[in-house]
Image 1 (cartoon, rainbow, N blue to C red):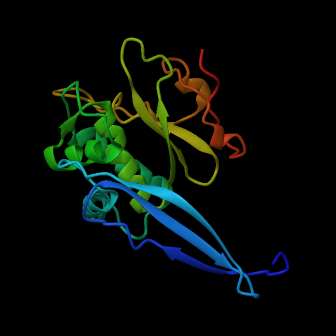
Image 2: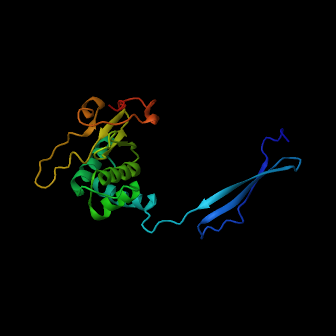
Length: 212
């Protein structure tokens, strides 16, 4: 019945066993006001969760514990972002390699082992930005033929700016500097190359240039 504005929808997932990996049929049934049913069946594939899987809830809980220690309620977004930046670059020891299969695993390593490479720095900051309510976007170096590199774009209300905690890590015995915190495109492009994220086209503020 085409005149039915809100047909009754029924989902039959009786054959799905959520405790066992496999492919199962799920049927969606729409019934109009006259009682005429229309159904469609799709396949639902369930995969076994990897033993080393780290879910977002765990990472956000770890991030919240850090955020509670480094921020106060009266801080501005800029001050919170700077606290996250300082904690990330000073609390994680650079090792030069990491498992980059998922950002949650990268963040979990950073929070629990306090070590990793640029991916771990980026992932930990991503989790911290999220729980702090700061808009952020992942950025990856456009030319990965020799190596990959990760950092963030954050929006504090007046546009998007780059933050690279890895390149500002003072290292063992190094000096403190903040050259890659809230950097505009022109400055960042001096030694970073990246692709334009499509979802930032209408974001306003600082937008990344196309990759060279």
